[in-house]
Length: 183
Ligand SMILES: Cc1cc2nc3c(=O)[nH]c(=O)nc-3n(C[C@H](O)[C@H](O)[C@H](O)COP(=O)(O)O)c2cc1C
Image 1 (cartoon, protein in one colour):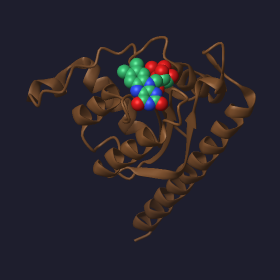
Image 2: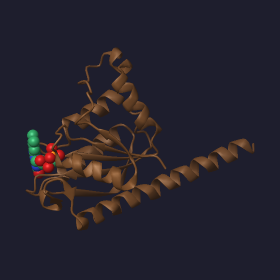
Image 3: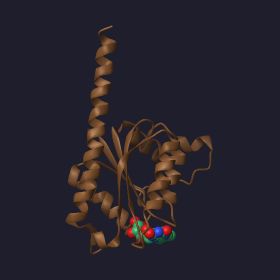
């Protein structure tokens, strides 16, 4: 099962980044870090698709069976960095792909705006944004870097739902292949 976790925060010291890294390390998932990758600002020019960074990120996400998108809530929405990535890549990496949504907020009852915004955006690229979702606040982190065990247990519930949907997709694809071979 090939699952990719995406850090959608542009900040190297962002809590979203620490969450995404912790998920990837705890589960041995692949990891894409928008605080590190030099992703260009989408400008609609065809040459952008040929940039090495864009090609390699696209390949990583297209090959994934499932995605975990982690966004900070910035100004009542998902991050511009993650939204920009969606614009750059188009629908291919997302289409019909089981996708879990997580948000990290500032603690003033924020986060749900980012989740709802991201859900709408993923719908726009035909992704399969799953029902379980979660907001993490600063209080859910130890030293602003490590997700506390009780909060991480809730993250695990989100990951378990993703694994269930990914497994169903894999079994369905195998079934379709067997059917087409036996024709
Ligand atoms: C530009 C900016 C805008 C923000 N807007 C919000 C907001 O609208 N709602 C909220 O709950 N937190 C907001 N925050 C706080 C972040 O959600 C908080 O820092 C959280 O840890 C996720 O961001 P990070 O991964 O960059 O740390 C904002 C932070 C920044 C830097």
